[in-house]
Length: 247
Image 1: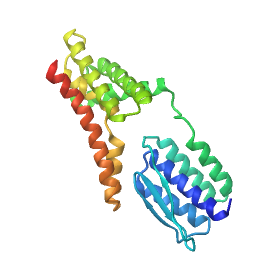
Image 2 (image 1 turned 90 degrees about the vertical axis):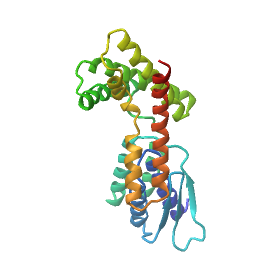
Image 3 (image 1 turned 45 degrees about the horizontal axis):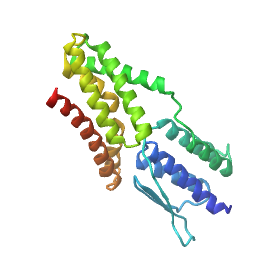
Image 4 (image 1 turned 90 degrees about the horizontal axis):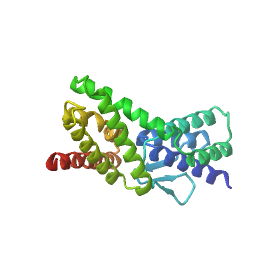
């Protein structure tokens, strides 16, 4: 492979991994520019959105494009790309090694096992409910419902691969479980339990990245991410509203 082509492929792959893993646009573009500059192409031009990256190198007639086909939250991958970029800048690894490790990273599965993610959802749900609502009585029930709701979301999203439907079904079942536990006398406040249990589903990172992209001048990617986060919030809200309407 030609050295210039390898630089382009490495830059585009690094940027795609970062955007797909939840990085803000400014960080992804900065990483691409640093890789290109350290490879001897400081005048590289980059344009990135949530659905694709366009990159051109001086003296090359055609720009190169790579699509961003999926979006998730995996900040471990973002950290790894930044780490590899720093190693390449310090000449600890070659460009060929950099590209090979990016390919391996792109195919890597999530580092945290399913049971640990469910446990994390439980630890998020109960304590946050206590902080927001000052309710110590329902912390155990909220933690359990939050863990079950996240597990439902994870399984449905894995097989159906439609994020908004997964969030709607998970929030719907969270609301039903909250109502049932209160009616059985196992919980005290339906509202408080629901507030805590849906926290693992709330799109905090996408909303934060949307604001950061807008502040950095990315007026295409910022609003697009904001709309995606609002659709997620709407899916959660519709699930809970359905429970309040019919239960």
